[in-house]
Structure formats: C-alpha cells, structure tokens
Image 1: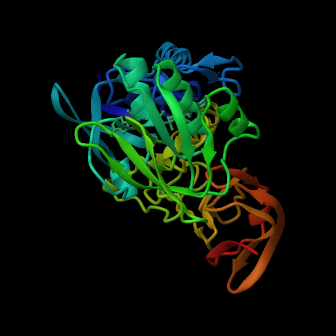
Image 2 (image 1 turned 135 degrees about the vertical axis):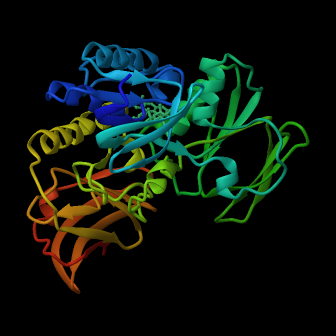
Length: 406
Ligand SMILES: Cc1cc2nc3c(=O)[nH]c(=O)nc-3n(C[C@H](O)[C@H](O)[C@H](O)COP(=O)(O)OP(=O)(O)OC[C@H]3O[C@@H](n4cnc5c(N)ncnc54)[C@H](O)[C@@H]3O)c2cc1C
C-alpha cells in the first residue's frame, strides 16, 4: 500500500466505510481505511439481530450481514483497507500507525476520524465493591457471546434502560442467561414505548426505576449486587453471577485528543460543524465519535456528507479560513451537535440530548445576553437524541451562543 494517499480514514465501522466509499464515488483516487481489528465492519459485526441498513442500503439486515456488505462494497469501489492496524497519532499531514509489521507513517491530504463510541465500563462509573469476573458492557457481552462463543453465566442484572440495554437482554437470552432486572436511575426506561412491557412479559425482566447499584459483591465471580431505590431509600440485593453495564456512551476520543483537536465539553467528541470539520484544517470527524449514539444507517448517511465536504475541499479547495461560532449549553441540555456553526452556513440538522426527562419546555438560543430564537419542545428523554429545526440557529451572529431550556 502507498504511504502517500489522498485521504486516510481512521476506523472501518459504518461511518468510516461509508465515508470512504463516497470519497471514491466523488473522484478521490487514493482512499485508505485503517482498522485496528482483524476484520473491518465496526460494532455491527457482533450485533446478531436484524435492524441494520434500512435508511442507507434500503434493506433490513443483521449486524454481521450489514458489516460484510459495507466492507464488500467499499473494496469494490477501490477503497484500500488496512486492517489489524491501529492509528496511534495524527496531524494535518497524515497519521502514524502500528501493527504486527511495525510502525509506519501514512501521509495524507486529509484525515477523517471515525473511531466510534463505547459504553462506559464499570471502573468509569465509580461503582464500589469487589472486582470479580462476570462484569461486562453490552459490547463486550456481544463479542464474548457471538464472536467467541464463550459461556457467560446463569443470572444477570442489566444496569441501564436505554435501547442497547434491551438488546443486552436478547444477547443474554441467546447465551442461556436469565435477566433478573434492568435498573435505571431515571424515572422510567429511555427506549421505545412498550420496551419495558416486552422486557417484563417476554424477558421476565422488570425495569426498576430510580435505582442505583450500591455495591458488587463476589470473590472470584459476581455473587450479588446491592441496589438502592433513590426515592424510598430501600436497599436490597439480587443474587446474580453476571452484571451488564449498558449504554452511557462516550465517544472513542483518545486519538482525537492526541491529535490536538478542540473537544466539545458536552458531547466529549471533537467540536465540529455539521460537515465534520474540526478545529484542525484537513482533519474531519464522522460517526458516533461526534456524538454518541446514533444507529448505523444514520451515521453512514451523515458520513457521506462529511465525505462530500472533504472531496469538495480537496478537489476544488473550496474555502479558506472559516469564522465559526461555538454553541454552548446549559443544564439540563447535556449536548448539542453541531456545536460549531460556520457563520452564514446554517447546518442541515441539529441534534440535542438532555440529562433528564423534560416536558413542555421552550428551547432558547441566547447570544450576548439576549434570547435570539425560541422553539417549543413537547418532551425530551435522556439518552435519546432529538431533532431541533436547523432554522433555530439562523439568527446566530458572530458572538458565541448558548442553548438552554426554560
Ligand atoms: C448492542 C448494540 C446494538 C445495536 N443495534 C443497532 C441496530 O439494531 N441498528 C442500527 O442501525 N444500529 C445499531 N447499533 C448502533 C451501531 O452499531 C452504531 O451506530 C455504529 O456501529 C456506529 O458506527 P461508527 O462507524 O461510528 O463506529 P464503530 O461501529 O464503533 O466503528 C469504529 C471503528 O473504529 C475502529 N477504531 C477505533 N479506534 C481506532 C484506531 N485508533 N485505529 C484504527 N481503528 C480504530 C474500531 O475498531 C471500530 O471498528 C447498535 C450498537 C450496539 C452496541
């Protein structure tokens, strides 16, 4: 493989593969995707259930089938794939990689970071207690079950009650493990309507609201989990040998930080405009790295927009320096994306997360102490993205601005 390319894409998940394919379609000649795993495809590789590809491939596929299809299509379009290779650092002129073959420099005219997101593991959640075996995130559980075929346990507690938490019940069931309950500190689950009912009746797993994990007990293997109801103060324990920490996503942002990119304090991913342009010229970002977590087909479609921008800027050198406004947030808004708005270029979309359930609120855009735009919001659900009309930021001037709920 050449060590001098037009674009290097870091991460061979749905976002990276989709961006790479689009670049080739837009006439960019030398596009390489670097993937640290032996097999490219990203998270869908171990999501053995249907629900992938509706919006981008117009087919309903299982995760592994979707991943294979994306890899096959990328190769057919002339994308070079460098797997079992990790990007260790990057700059505006390319990336440094390491693999079993040693280290290597790949010079590139542009870099797209598409390193995805991960669930916060137990140590990052500050859960006290022993450190026994039997503790997973949903992603780890899926790899363990579907990719490695290893035994999991007999009785599990799922921490979290968002979309992916219900997916964890399916995986546990496939592994022959009973789910005793899902616990969430919020007032109810954060998945689609009816998910809680399905979990309770079909999966025999009630959702305990306002509940936190106080302690994990077990010498070699998990034996018990102590729980507390935050409203009543009631403390009880569940006898389980497996705990799955689900959801609570965080962008896989270490590489982006190492590249010196300005990070957004809300999303914890690179601060970027709607087209994936970061603070560093020639370095772009796509997919769940920008704001966790969207579905695979959504990140794939949005990554095409990033690729269009990269192609235009490479082939036509369209724009010089661009003044932008940083969009801040006030709690309970936990993040907004894009969080950088190029003055005079309204984004095509605006996504927002809140840290709690809210209803009948007004979303305000505040600039220089004045409310410059308002929009009514019926309700928000934590851990779920919601759309805001992009016209909301039309009134943005060159001063910085904050989004808040009133
Ligand atoms: C349990 C679960 C169930 C899901 N179910 C669905 C569903 O039914 N339908 C749906 O549409 N979506 C689903 N999703 C979401 C979907 O998987 C993600 O939206 C999608 O994978 C995000 O794509 P991405 O390319 O941004 O990131 P990823 O898929 O995370 O890909 C990132 C890639 O970057 C690589 N990488 C990271 N760092 C480096 C580095 N330094 N060097 C080289 N490579 C690197 C990683 O190895 C990885 O392959 C599910 C997710 C989970 C966890």
